[in-house]
Image (cartoon, rainbow, N blue to C red; front, side, top):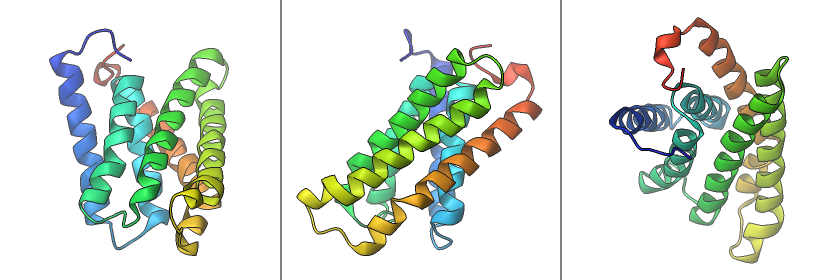
Length: 171
């Protein structure tokens, strides 16, 4: 997490959270195949543009806000989405700092796989201990999670390459 919360950190994080919320609200009828990658894109852009702490904040607040606005109808899965998002941004940041050659690409692959495994195991084996999980939720929190994380991360890697260095808070 960041050692010091600056106004710029808070402002950028709030803007990224707002972007994620607008995407969720405006595309709510489109569904997971489009919204999922876009939210994962915002999560990785939070890491790029601000810090891993920003990505964690956005990753924790987006599922809560999605539930509050009726986008995510099944509350028992929300804490698991939050943890999955934290794992995604934290492992992305970890692997991109550890792997020098093509680090961002490998980091997205590894982080996406970790998020996918966590959410799949959670939906199939953990959430069912607390609530009756609809089959649609189990299906949504399996292989589609790998797809959405990979596509969103790949999009973030591409967009990052076209942004000027001045846009990055920690550069």
